[in-house]
Length: 332
Ligand SMILES: Cc1cc2nc3c(=O)[nH]c(=O)nc-3n(C[C@H](O)[C@H](O)[C@H](O)COP(=O)(O)O)c2cc1C
Image (cartoon, rainbow, N blue to C red; front, side, top):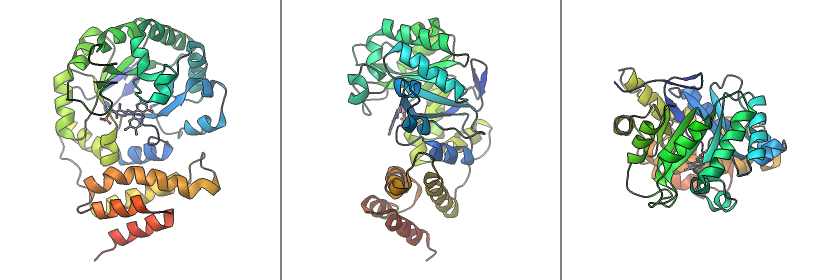
């Protein structure tokens, strides 16, 4: 029997399907969209620097605003300084998050050059100190998200997960790629399976889960307690509902054109209402996020949708993109 729910330090995750953190994507609007569709057991914010949060920096405070009914929810921190991350974690707790997640997987130069993100995988003793101080700072569960390793010669997720568990981490997420793989590489989930064996806390498997078939094989191949789904949710916001239906032994939901239209419009409306968006920048910001969604959503969800994708991507203004959307969904 494959698992359908799990528990992170007393927080029930049911279904065991998590919206993976994505910078520039998993803001309040996107998380709302996914929650409204259903099937997700935990949502995670975009990552924010622990140092900025510990200072109460307004831009980042806005980025981690949560809906009161968004439960359970995790806020993800990145950084290198254990003290600042611990301060940031206190803020995460005060903001009402159920879980504080620490990023040890980000491959970006910006984050790695400051020796945070996946570069922490090369410094297990420093990673240990971070988890120790963050766990000591808060009462909510602390989790760690990592890759299988930094590169092919150092795929040390099982060892690092043991270190994190030893310092009190309540769950571990492993993306099967190494930092060197970035977003390529050949599927190799062996280190996720080894991590499951190495620790007693729940391990979540991550990487290329996009539908029921890939969810089933990921759970089977790794023995993981649950799944993190990132890009699959941009291409198909119903992916959680589909997997959750399969878990319940029910048929996958059928999504018609009208529902797809409604979802795009609801997303735009929700983006416009974000507290972090300054009125004079609203249209540009919303257009940017809409383009991010359009890139895979149109292709995957709309038959012949590449035309609309191109129109949205080439739009100079939000009204231009909205006109293209309305024309597309116009009954012919
Ligand atoms: C646009 C984008 C932004 C991301 N930002 C974050 C982030 O803020 N924190 C994090 O831990 N991972 C981040 N990731 C990685 C994803 O959470 C996930 O681990 C990765 O995409 C693999 O899962 P997937 O194949 O389901 O997308 C990001 C990925 C993408 C594509």
